[in-house]
Amino acid sequence: MKIVRHALASSAALALVITANPALARDRHEDSEAAAELSEHDRLFALFADADERGLELNPLGRLFRGDDRNADRLGDFLTDSSFYASRLNTQLNLAKLELIDRSKLSETDQLAYDVFKYNQESALRGQTDEIRALTEVRPVNHFSGFHTFYPNFASGDAAAQFKTLENYEDNLSRHDDYIEISGRAIERFREGMESGVLETRLTIGNVVKQLDTMLAIPIAESQYMKPVTNFPEDFSEEDKARLTAAYEAKTAEIYAADERMRDFLRDEYLPVARESVGLSDMRGGEKLYAQMIESTTTLPLTADYLHDLGLAEVARIKNDLEEIKAEVGFTGTLTEFFDFVRTDEQFKPESREALTQTYYDIGEEVDAKIGEYFSLVPKTPLEIKPYDESIEQFSAGGSYQSGAPDGSRPGTFYFNAYDLPSRLTTGNVTLYLHEGAPGHHFQISLARENDDLPAFMRFGGNTAYVEGWALYSETLGYEMGFFDDPWNRYGTLQDEQLRAMRLVVDTGLHAKGWSRQQAIDFMLENSGMTETEVVAEVERYIAIPSQALAYKVGALKIQELRKKAEEQLGDDFDIREFHAQVLDTGALPMPVLESKIDRWIASKAI
Image 1: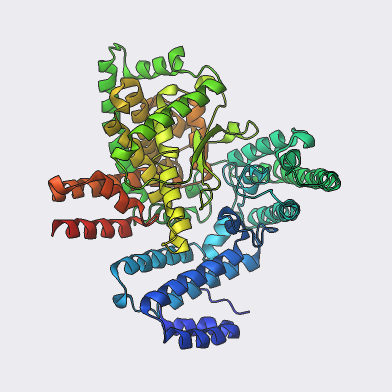
Image 2 (image 1 turned 180 degrees about the vertical axis):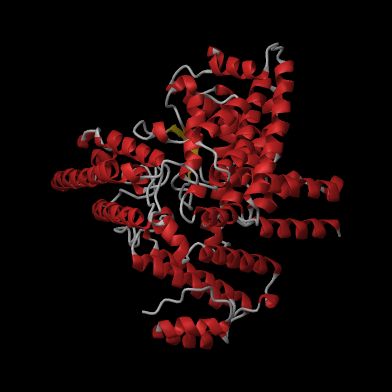
């Protein structure tokens, strides 16, 4: 089949897609007859529904995270040519069909949906060029991104996949086959990169080898893959339990063999030729890739130089605020000595995993008691709090959020890291909860998913600048809630804000300005109170997933800017609960679309 390789910008371009696939001509004829009877709103939402269904056909895993068991026996055709070309053609078709809808005939709300859909599809298409694919797909795994870290928990019964029926258990075995195939294809893609000279870093691949070593050291009987057979539903017969247990043991052994092949290939063949340097600017094609990633991540046309300078200014401002806390608590040494004091003093270290868990439970209760003063919209999905599984915690972030089921039947989960407890400072606990839990990721993601008035792409989609920007903005609400009246909690939140500011400097430093890993580590240790364990994990994260860390501060600053504008223009008519509802009630918007929405809201209130 002929593949259209460029963006489709008009209805004429739709004809190119139809030429590539005659079946679409029939679909278009049928669509045009039906469209004559539909309003522009109906045509728009019919496109959304159709695009969503086509997208899910290409992504069975996405169905499972929505609680939809159709195609639950598949993970998807990741890393195949057919998957790539089908996804790109699907994006082109979405844009071509959107061009046939008259935006001027839509309501203001529908125009918002139109704009988000168009932005998302155009952004996706910019990342689906042959050039970008040749720079990304041949580096399919690193220690922060890869099925080897995602899949064990997903297959354990503790994630989105259900384990209630015999069919659920059989589907999981079939997904194991997909995982094994994906692992083999990843090795093939790595080999293509070895031939083209587009290589992952020695550091990230070395970490992957360590991850796989850790996973393979776990006895099969104790692995996460065997968890489902330790918790059978009561109505399963003894015969089925025995059969499934044997099948899971055999299939888990196959998974271990696939992971061992991956480990051995990376250790023995790939690691010796991997890049010694850590920045994209030192990789063939890396400069162009990084520029594309910055715009995709921030949803704004920003340059690496601008973000680097912005980060330096924010680092200086926050460092001054930390000096003021040092004076407030009566510490007489230098700021560096103050950081060392907090890093090492036993009063700021968790006593145990259990004590750390209870601390987060207590914070959650305090936030719940105050949340109604700031939010009229709250999710019905409950929030669960627990540490990472010990098998993955060493290479995991300080905390993360996993979304719940859209109908609230499965809770959202705030994970925190309990690895190397002496390095986990309690000063940051409140801020981490506000960011990953409530009102951060849990509110934003759950409210979007629970709003079935939104088209699916707005309920379940998103962009990093909005998602992480909202979570960072949520941290700042701790001031109004009174949590940061305590100077040590305020120290913790400033340290976390400093982290996001330093990310602007370090990410751009690593990938656009030739910084070394050690240079990045030294900068972060000098300008914050983070421990070396935390700093190393952060720097190696930025090396593994360039640009992602830029979105936090960029998105938060934009939301803060919009709130300040609303407060200044509305004066006494400003309602924080209403502002938050405006930001949250239409899902994760690109920053330009969010700004236009808030501007319209301000104008409507000012009348």
